Image (cartoon, rainbow over all chains, first blue to last red; front, side, top):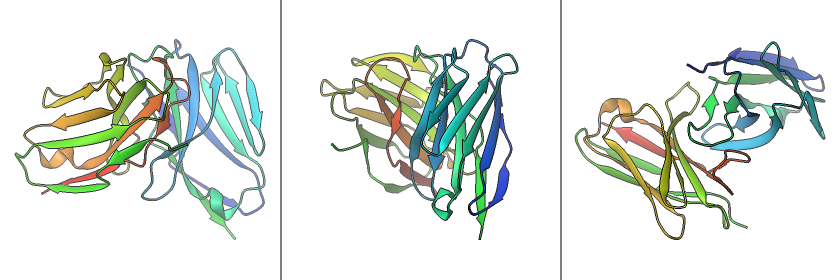
Length: 112
Length: 113
């Protein structure tokens, strides 16, 4: 079955770049997503990338996709204290029938 | 524009009881999906509805059911509650049946005692 793997924790200094990595197994994935979850809150869609793209940039966020290795990364430039949250990688077939498959999330910890 | 709204925000139920959770999608969105997020885990897909029809179902027992109304709002029902059903239940809405741009609500925190 499908599986999405992420490291559980990442600690970075304020002002540095954060790179959160994710691997997935379903080669038929059409879209890959990054969501942010702050304590006690729902999921905020940060960005998503279509599987035939290899990069997408949106302000401080850069998504890189290596489809051959089934590896997805999210780079956050100039990391701020407000970026402290859990970041979830998710993959989906695009057709909706199976929903999105999420990783367990990466806790991003910001050091002052 | 209002985002995805879920009610109630918190709920405490006793084992064996029944619960109904409600979701209103973003205006203009016709697809609603339900997810269960157990503490420390990522969300798990339960159901997807589009145009009032079930389009997908995750690996959950028959105690879980859902429906979508003509105004595209949705209810998730769970019967015979177990302690393990304690979780954050998230609703997501999308404009079409595909999962592109799935926007999540704040969730309903269900505690079963």
